[in-house]
Amino acid sequence: MPFTALGEPCVLLKLGEVVLKGRNRDLFETRLRANVKHALKDHPIRLRQRHGVIVVFLPKGAGAEVAEAVAKRATEIPGIVLVQLAWRVPKDPDAITKAAVELVRDSGKAESGARFAVRSRRRDKRFPLRSNELDRLVGGVIKDTFGLPVDLTDPELTVYIEVDRDEAFLYTDGLQGTGGLPVGSSGRALALLSGGIDSPVAAYRMMRRGLRVDFLHFSGIPYTTSESIYKAYALVRTLDKFQGRSRLWVVPFGKAQQSIKASGQDRLAVIAQRRLMLKTAAEVARRIHAEALITGDSLGQVSSQTLANITAQDNAVELPILRPLIGMDKAEIIAEARRIGTLEISELPDEDCCTLLAPRSAETRAKIEDLRQIERRLDAEELAVQLADSIRPYMLEA
Image 1 (cartoon, rainbow, N blue to C red):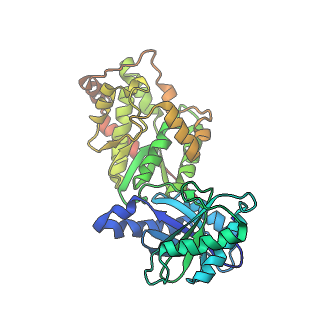
Image 2 (spheres, helix red, strand yellow; image 1 turned 45 degrees about the vertical axis):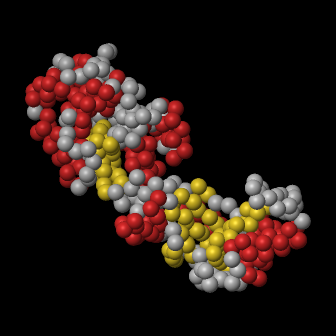
Image 3 (tube, rainbow, N blue to C red; image 1 turned 90 degrees about the horizontal axis):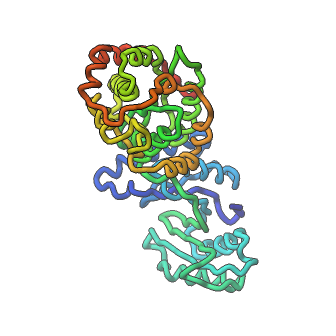
């Protein structure tokens, strides 16, 4: 979107369900502003919030490239539903009208005879013109200047005007934001991150619900290479754009898997492994003050994700296990992974820990008592503590 000398470029961030939070709204908005400042830390911006809109004021002399970069980055911040590149102009009918004309001219649609509409919102009721009066004034000048037809039902071009306390903002369209709630407003959780498609999408979905997410990856080391760790790190870097300051923890899980395999319960090995992973994750969560675990389970997608097996896994720990993908099918999950940018990484080949336990026939209706017998032989509670002691942190670069 080009800018002319008639206005100062800025970016408007429209809030979604945050505005419905009643008495807690200030807490959510404070968290969101902090997240915006962190996400845009590479730009010397100023923020101002009024009536469900955060205005991002750009550095003096900033042009279209800076405004577009800020707007694009802002679309990735949970809690923002719409991002608009706008002109900031004096709160004067004549200045607003002139800016609207230039906005139509710069849109490239004036030459095509596009049907247009003007939509005004008057936040400052002291402004001398009502919203419909401003619509008619500005619309009349645009019609006279370009000869464009007015269409209030299905316009091809809409000029939006927001009259605020100190200035007016004009824009023509917007970018879809991430929506949801500000990261950190709902607490902290620990996501079990494999190298597959599902778990990164599950983590993203819980970020959108306001959870700050840490990541735990189980590596097959020393029986596999470090490829799965590199892959997990790449996935966390991609997801970090939604929350910032992400942390990845890696558990060397290969020896524990060999112990499970040696137990002789071939059909139960996968579920026993999952329970041990959850026990280990619960211990790590306790240490980092996470209040829930997140997995990428989707009901019935694979044999370990039958209702009976999911119930057996829930029984392993006391912490809540969040499964945001539970009712999604694979096509829906893949589409979301593609949209958030994790699919290409997830599809890279790697040798993860799951390759170490691949029974010819997995149990679909695991009995909890059978699993507990395996765990008693392994001393699973103590083993989970030892595994948690062995974790390695992989902190993202600033």
